[in-house]
Length: 127
Image (cartoon, rainbow, N blue to C red):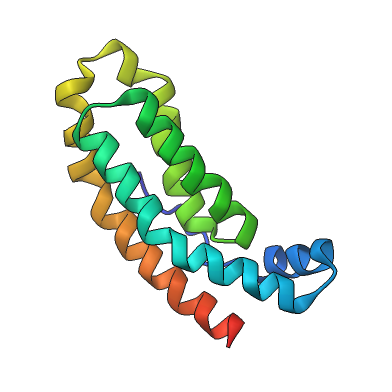
C-alpha cells in the first residue's frame, strides 16, 4: 500500500462539509470530534487485526475510512480503503489468525503517522 500521492487533507471536502452543515461552528465541532475519536478508531483497527478478528477489523476499518472521508482526510481514508479491500478478499481465504497480525505490523505505523499528520492540519482548521 502506498499513499498514491494523495493529499493529507482535502480542504474542498471540509468546505463541502461546512456547506452541508450550514454552520461553520458546527463543522468545527464535527472536526474536533473526528480528532478526538481518531486514536480510538486506530486502536480498534490495531486490536481487531492483531487478534485475527476479520468482522471486527472490517467494522473498525470502515469506521476509520468513512469518518476520514467526511473530513477530507484523503490519505488516511485511502489507507483504510486498502485494508478494507484486503479484508473483503484475501483475509477470508488465508488463515486470518496469522495473516491479520502481520497486516497490522505492516500498516499500523503508517496509519498512526498519517493520523498524526492529518490531526495537525485539522487542528489548524479548527483554531
